[in-house]
Length: 122
Image 1: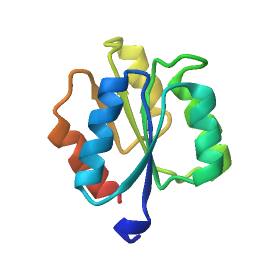
Image 2: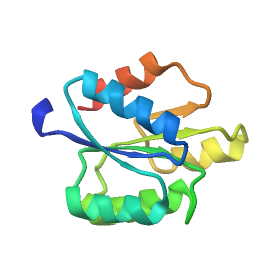
Image 3: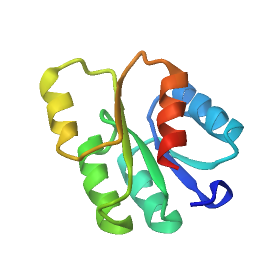
Image 4: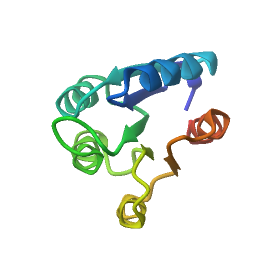
């Protein structure tokens, strides 16, 4: 896939984190779109067919797992996911693994590691 055609959907309710991710993804030469809640994430997935989704698990209007299910129904089951969360519970990480994400990051995470995961997915 050519980088200029890749579109990354960032689903993050913390606007500072979302803005930082958007800037870092732009620095990689990739396009991104941002949703701050589950409903907008679903709409943006339908409208833009993202190549990759960076997905916070704790969201207003539904959790990240619900959004992952919706996105994969819309875009396809092979759409790569990267989960991020502030939740340290082991069962959250275990549930995330059911989605076969390319990466899972617990906040606070190292931004360079997340961007490396993005780069390898695209």
